[in-house]
Image (cartoon, rainbow, N blue to C red; front, top):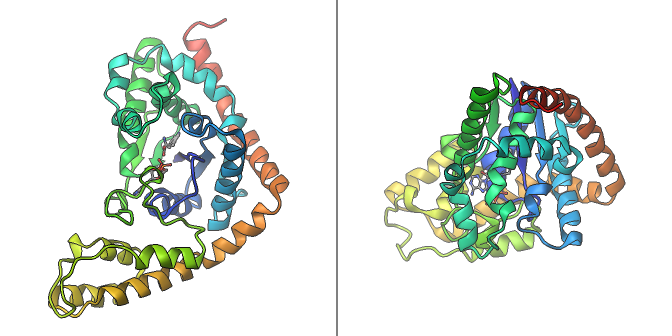
Length: 320
Ligand code: ADP
Ligand code: TRP
């Protein structure tokens, strides 16, 4: 099975990215032929400072590696090191109905957040389709918000295949129900654009401050609380060992759960979980040249797969 996924370097990676996507990347890398990339072409639709984009890109690369993505096992690369993808984007554009893109909610959401209505933002799903189709990906691990884009990719691939013959494999999204939408500090979906994130590499003090200042209701300790409706519990459950989670659930349901204690324990568990990657990422970032070399080697491997796909697509549609 070929797996492909990407993350934009539009901000520091957060625990929504981790549970929604990155953890699946890690789990899949030893079982499948995996391609993971940093979507810096995509990020141009929202990051407009060159210096910031460069820095963010290196940070995402360092975070990937620090979490345990292994460049000897998975192919890890930078989208802009694979220029074939932009050529394929054009070919796919010519089979993409406007209506398909007009229906995409991510575009509308981004306009609502204040991003300029530019063509790149509108055509973003076509570039994403090219990312997936150029390696003939079967499986795309993502969070719920990207489901529609993978469906659009399937539509585009089908239309190309119908018009020119079977060239592209139709991909499937891989979305884990329990982890499809990780809530942020305010209970809405955790997202860079809502400013409600807990970043993977946050310093323990920052992390502590964020969690301790989360809003909770005024139900007294001894009264029962609905764990399904509590945002703090939703974060706690991501980190707690099974037995501890079971016990906490009981306390919520029967009474006895103190929000302050749950917060302190959540901080502890989070700090513990990411202490090592945080350190490793820092070390990796101190050697940006090495990161570039790892990404360049990954790009060579990705291009070896991308070139023949692009050649087939060009041939199929009659480009001499
Ligand atoms: P953001 O919404 O913060 O800009 P991205 O769009 O860069 O995040 O997301 C990168 C990956 O992480 C995608 O696969 C996306 O579906 C996943 N993801 C992002 N936020 C969440 C979340 N809160 N819950 C689950 N998955 C998420
Ligand atoms: N659009 C994705 C996001 O914002 C990032 C992305 C770009 C991607 N190309 C992709 C994800 C291909 C999966 C497959 O999160």
